[in-house]
Image (cartoon, rainbow, N blue to C red; front, side):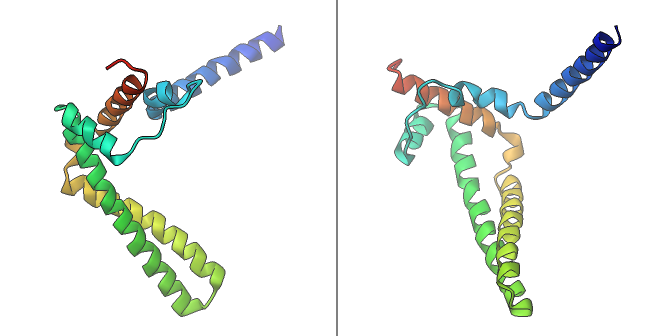
Length: 147
């Protein structure tokens, strides 16, 4: 009897734990139809994305804005990585320290650049994840011959 009550206790807590984290990572639910496929979707090019942007007047502009925001992240990555690695190398002359600083500065720079892009393009006002999901649906339908 003791064994079944402890299983019930752990099962109850496990379900609560799963529910808690599934709410925080709902992104996995949005992309799972495109990732968990028997046959993966073929790769797309920039011209395919531009075609979707022209095709979809609702989600196209949001996707275009999200793509432009990536440049801020990339610029931040380069600036953060090079500057922190340079400072680490200047003061320590340690190759592993400079390498770690390069990685950490790149992560920080990406985060900082993405935050600037959020405000610059006001990404908090648009549904960029929804636009990406709509693009994936469009791409899947186009490749499966539904158009």
